Amino acid sequence: MATTVLGVGTGVFVITAVWIVTFVLWMMLLRASGSSKLGVVPVFLLALTITLALVFFPQSTTTPSAFKEIEIVDTLFIARYVLLALMSVIFLCALFMLLPFHFLEPVYAKALRTR
Image (tube, rainbow, N blue to C red; front, side):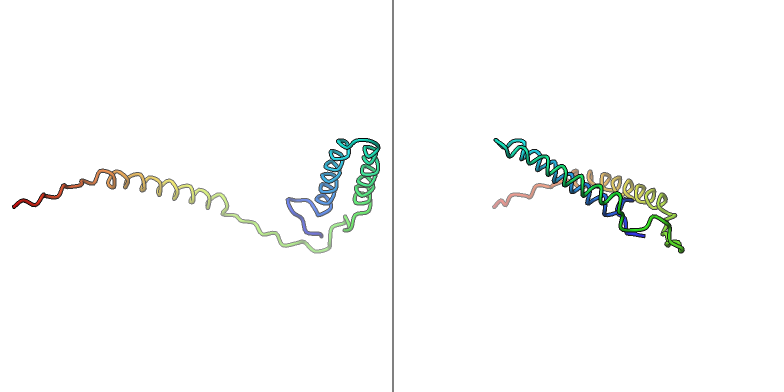
């Protein structure tokens, strides 16, 4: 099975990139003057051809393979985040409890030298 990113294959990213480039070219060609505005039609047809080729002729097979891929599952996911949140709260409380000692520390005046 092909590698996936965010649950979709590379073909979806290619189709997205093709249509983004197509829309950018549309905006540039539609702002042009004269007959260059008609360049929108071949750009659209090229993007449509690429999209249809990627949809109807996929690279990988759609049938599942004979072996099952190893799926790594983190069973302590929630417990780790609860522990992280608890430790963050304890750290912030300790920090704010130490701040008054730092700001309220008395500063004694030094005696002036007298003869």
